[in-house]
Length: 602
Image (cartoon, rainbow, N blue to C red):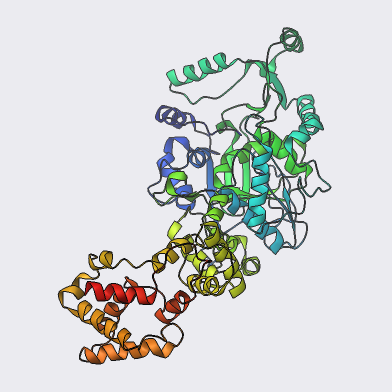
C-alpha cells in the first residue's frame, strides 16, 4: 500500500511559489488556511494537526467543495444514473454510480489484509459497507489482499473472517463462499494472470513503463529536491527511454518496477458521498508512481482498481485515510477504460486524546473485545455510531433497526472519538436485553471459565446470572462482581471512607447490634426466601433507632449485611446465597456467618 509522502515546511514553501495555476491555487503553501477551511472542519476535530498525515497530504493537493441544497445545512453530491468520466478543463471526473435512492445493482467490498487481527476500524468499515449494501438490496464482496507474502498468514485470514461473522457481518462472495468474480485472494489472482493482463494493456498503451532507477538514485533525487527547497516530483528518465535501452537493461538482469505515467496538468474530480466534490490536479501527485514492485507484486493502487473493476464494485466505502489514493486510482480507471465506482470516505476513529487509536488506549481488535465479554450486538451498535447517526436521539439499536435506519447522507465528516466507557455502557444495555436463558448461558460460561463454578447448572448459578445481568457492562465484569458479593470483609468495610461517618455517629454499631438481636430471636430466618422478611427487619431497626429512614437507615443496614454501601436487592442476594452448594468453587460467607462477625466486632 502506498504511504503518504511527507510534506516538510521547506517543501510547503516551495510548492507555494510554484502553484500558480487556477486549478490548484497555492494549496500546499496554505495548508493551515485552505485545509482548515475546506477539510479540517469536515474531516478532523480541532487540535489534531499531527493526527493523520495521510488525510492532510491528500488535502494539500485537493479542494473539498460542499454543495448545499437550498435551505439545507447538510452537504450533498450530484448523482448521475451511472458512473462515467467527464472532461473538465482537460481532466477526469468520478461521478456517482447511484446514491441512497438506488435499489438494485449496488456492490460493495471489504478487502482486509491478513497480516494481523480485525481491528475495530476495519470492523466499522465492513459494517458500513454491509449496512449500505443490504439496506439497498445490494451485495457485499469479501476480498483478501494478501500480497504481503512475508506477513500474510492463513491464521490471520481465518481470524478476520471469524471476527466478521461474530459481528453478524456476512458476504455474498468471498474466498470461503465462492462467487462469479473470483478468485477472491490477490495471491490467487496473481497466479491467474489477472493483473499481468491489465499491466500489459497499460504498457502497450504507453500508460505504464519499466523504470530501472535504483533506490540510491531515488534517494539522491529526493535529497536534491530538498536541497533546492522543492517538493519531490518524480520524472523518471526511463519514462521516455528507447526500446533498445530498455532491452539492454533487461539483458543485464537489472531490477525494475513498473510506473504509471501521470498526465500533466489534469484535473481529477470525485463526487464523494460523504465529503462532496473533491478536486486534485495531477501535477500535485508527486509524479509517476509505482504500480508493480520489483518482485512482480502489484502495488495497492493498481491492484485495487483491477480487482474492484473486475468484481463490478459500484461503491467504494472506506476511511478518509484512503482519500489520497483516490486521484491515482481514478487515473488508472481512466487509462484502463473501466467505469469509476462511487467513492465515500468515512470519518476516522480517534482515541480520546485525538491521536490514532492504538493499544495504549485499550483494546483495538474485535477479538479482544470478544474475550473481554462484549456482545457482538453491543459492539456493532457502538461502532455504527462512530461517524453516523439517524438524526434522532436513539442510541440503542438492534442490527435490524440499523439496517432500517441507515442512510449514507447521515454520515459525519468529523472524526469520531472512541469512548471505551460509552462502548461499555451500550454493551451493558444489550446484556440487560438478554433473555433469561441467554443470560444464564453466557454469564454462566464466563463464571465457569474463570473457575468460580464447576458447571453452568443449579439454582445458585441461575439466580446469580440473572442478578448479574442487571449489574454488568461486560460478561467479564460478572466475575469480579460475584466475587465481591460473596466476600464479607468487615474490617475493610469499617476502614473505608463510606463507613466513616456512620462509625462516628454510632449508627453503624447500633444497627449491627440490632441485627444480632434480631437474628438471636429468629427474626431473620426467612430473609432470602420472603421479601417481607427484609422489610420487617428494616422497619424494626428504624423503629428501634427512633424512626430514622432512607439513607440514614439503609446505608448502615447494607454495610452491616453486605460490607458495601451498594449492590443488588438484598432479598435477591440472600436468596442466591441460600443456594450455595458444592458447584460453587469460591469461598462465600453465609448470612449466619456475617451476623457472627458483627456480634464479634460490635
